[in-house]
Image 1 (cartoon, rainbow, N blue to C red):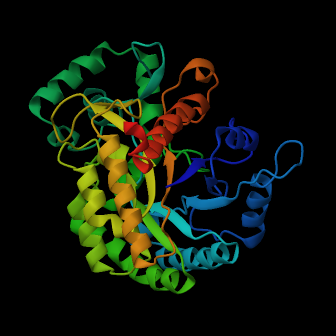
Image 2: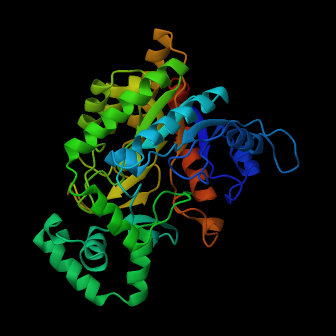
Length: 404
């Protein structure tokens, strides 16, 4: 397992020096300043690589840009409207440029409108730290009463609708504004941001698109880009829906093991792979993460290791970001499954034996508090998570030594 760290570029509060001191082996980054649908130029890619390669004093960092997260898929591609064909061609040109730069793993997602959704970005924990949280009642209050989406109440149980009405009534104007900003925060580091009117417009443009049509659009997209990716020796990996259930009347098609298996069968290419995010998939109690790794592991090209604590047994319920070893996912069992997959790859003679992973998200603790880092990406909270994951990995790699 190859230890990596997500870095949002020169404006990230976590520096290249910080990453080096954290002991990571590679960097996960993206050109967030390039508008979605545009080509990533060789010059822009090389500039990011150059920055990662040097520490503050100009000495070599020993780090390289190893994983792209994300090369964004435009809304036009997802809807197959507007400039979607041109955007696919630009995506393919970007693949050429990334290959030429020596970057082989490209993460993307296929979620309509919003790339992840939380109702709280700094929810206070009993420890005094903070984390991100999704509260189904707050979300229903946003959807029904703030966004005022037509038919929104039909997507929730009568109990949730009534509680959302009461909670909205009791909210201050400041909390209503904060809730709206949190929900539409969008992709971390993205050049894009959304107003409520933007969200309404994007939802309207999907015009009741059913899940089977969105899935077909994903298959069409992959049918276009995977042959080229395979030819270039690249590994594409789709991130799961976050959270893994429909929101805002929009479909979600990458939320379960069956969703992934369907897409892997439809475009049966080694370039068509999975970003297995234990936090996103772990929100659903019916997702078996170690089992998914065992069954689909040959196509897992990238790992996000984080944990969530479900606050109910509902498939569509509240949850919050837990400590990396403290949530509902058995991280030891999951990492053991990853190491089994790596042994299978070694026996098969594959070149991609070591699967890159990063400690995803993290609670804000210690000096993280008040630093206003990218939500979910505090330096110390992630470093704590990486240390815990590194400990599991080391123990599993040396089981006999642990018994002495």
